[in-house]
Image (cartoon, rainbow, N blue to C red):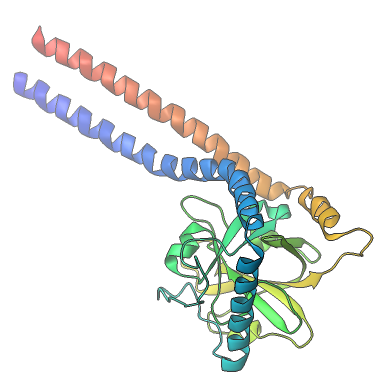
Length: 294
């Protein structure tokens, strides 16, 4: 009889442990996304404040290195490297903090994206935010340049470029680097093969920003979705900052809001379920122990 009770208790604990693990896996992902979403506004402001404190000399040194890198892209014509092929390619930009610090920030109000942009689309950087694809111009603007910024189609702690397909012609993209602000407007999007890099070549006299992610959303994702945008300069009377304020007040697309809402609701429901299963397990196990002692 005692042996049967012991086996019953063991199977009860194994079953409850499996339930708890099954709840914790999605809860961890949902909770990470929710916390990251709450933190991103503060992290963006901290980045802006930090960049504003750079000395004139530091800014000049950085600008020289940026010009040197962009010149090397033009002179070498080496082309871009696909960041999603599994090869953890490491680029060398010779820019301070390139491995750990954000070079700039990208904001896309319509799909609720605020992400740091790191130099080099390595596995590490793509897990931290968006990343500049080596072999293309740095995102600093300029005629005859094209900067390519890559991002995952969602990750365990952020939705990232999950909703990139929702962008339409005319939607705005903001690049912030220190005190510099660049505005781009979407012109078109296209699904390409991973090695169709001629699609990412600069166009003479055009200032282009291209966003790159995997396609389709559900793996395997053998193709690449690219969204192209051209530089937009607002009329001088409006000013760049007034235009940015207007863009940042753009309502988030309904489909994107729905995804975000389900993530928040899922976080709450899974948290409640986890606590319920945990507490009920402790209570029931206590009862089983007391019955054994009687």
